Length: 400
Ligand code: NAD
Image 1 (cartoon, protein in one colour):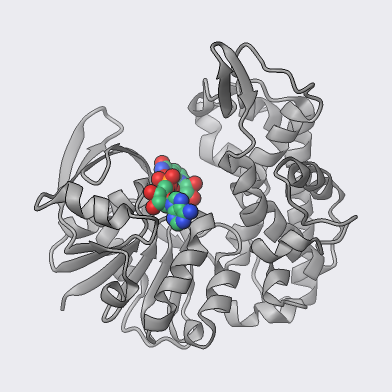
Image 2 (image 1 turned 45 degrees about the vertical axis):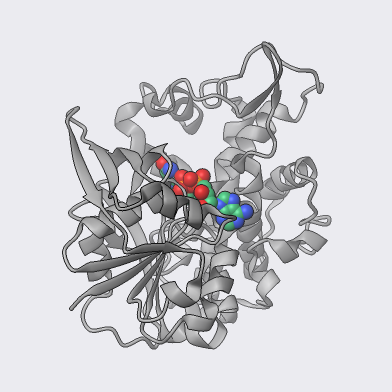
């Protein structure tokens, strides 16, 4: 039987997912792109051609993969009916517009995939899709399977690297899907990455990498005098000791949150929650010339070599930090704020997270935290559980 896949988005992730899915046998691919006039531009640009993926391999060789989506539309009433899988392949700030667009057409037993989900995806999904969400299977990936960059909009993309394994969470709810719901998505991805199942959504959320960028931004810019710099500072190699300590402290607070949740609800398995230091060692130990502590791993990781702070050139050779970049504008509302919300529900104080959040929210002109409580007016546009009316840990039950 034919697999019908809706790929939501129009950026790098959506290009790979739609091209790759369309290259598989017996798959109908519908791209849903609700952003501006992107669907129309993409349709025109592609014409009758296929999307071409240049897939790089670790040994330096590469393959070419071609796939032609059946159609690209901004109209969910054309894309969603009859679909088996709906894959979100867009940045977190755009998820809401896709949930709203697909909502009238989602039917029981559809598989909704966050690729990646990012913290709060589950809260948002179950809140917007309300009664229908528990009848669907929701699968949330911890990251994107690839590092990828569009080389020609609508037509060509380079897959720089592919992960070997990728953690995911499967919320089967009341859905009735024959066999393993991961099977169709693994078929589309191919042999790699291998999708590995975690116990529940709290494991990846409390181990999220969204806590990396905000403390680094804090360390670099909290004492900045407001004057332009003559070069772009190194993001990881220039990391301050304070920033690494804050990152580690935020991670400690997440572990404390996991512990508090386990005490109150021992049935929730949180063995998979890990400290950022341990994750770093496992994921990048071989790439780091000094693994003695988190600071040194971040500074000496060859994969991070040469990465710079996001900066705007205001005059030739004069740079100002770009505080609109996703390191704060995404990682705070769809990261740190969600974590703070979960800690609050677990009754755990988070002084270190609060310190970074209080600084970051002021830089991006938002109010989430008031004192040490998550009750600012902009919680309403975050993905904190409080935004969706969660009052206690019991409210997590339908998502587990
Ligand atoms: P992207 O920057 O390519 O996404 C841009 C797309 O987002 C646009 O083409 C448009 O379709 C959509 N968009 C932009 N503004 C919008 C708006 N206001 N409303 C609705 N849609 C809007 O992002 P990406 O590279 O595809 O990344 C997707 C996710 O994967 C992100 O969370 C990213 O952090 C993560 N990720 C990406 C990579 C990578 O290599 N590309 C690697 C790891 C993780």
